[in-house]
Image (cartoon, rainbow, N blue to C red; front, side, top):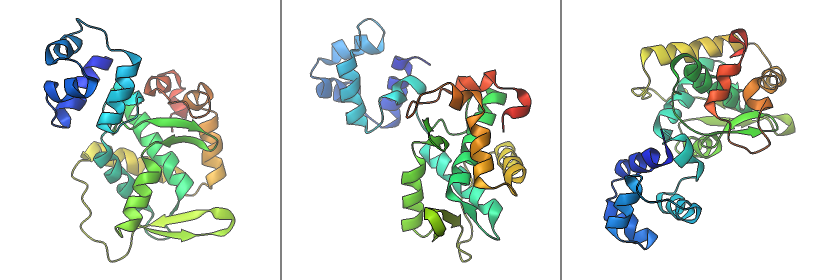
Length: 223
């Protein structure tokens, strides 16, 4: 999808009219309509204004709308696969990356569409840290602080009937398969694995990792 396609999708998803957006940009609705029709240019400054208006990173216009609600269900579903001892926070972040990129490898679309960035300890979703805080504050996860700053995440025993309605049966199966693959591996092993993949190796620190890069990966090294 193009930048304009993503802009239109985001505008409609958030319930804004063309006139609302035109007012924010300081132009007429007719001029904005021409932008959506690809008959007038959308400037970099206007993109920055729209990113602030919609409360999203500028990259979302280039990579598409992120389904953060679905990512949250992916997060909880993955943690739920480690009921006994919980899962290290860094390891969880990598499993979610594998789930999104493996799904893209097979379907040319990710599960959630969230943006991942190239970080020191491997790919990390922009939404990961904020969602971790939200889930902890609302009692949907518990966090145990270990030595050297490590954190173990688990689902509280009293939490039942977790909503996974946004995940298809195939998507749940994919996440289960990935969790089983890395269940007995330590954090450093999974981090090192991501460092040897095309997506991480092809990007600079803090750069958004295009999902398309996973298509260049060896089939046996997708997760």
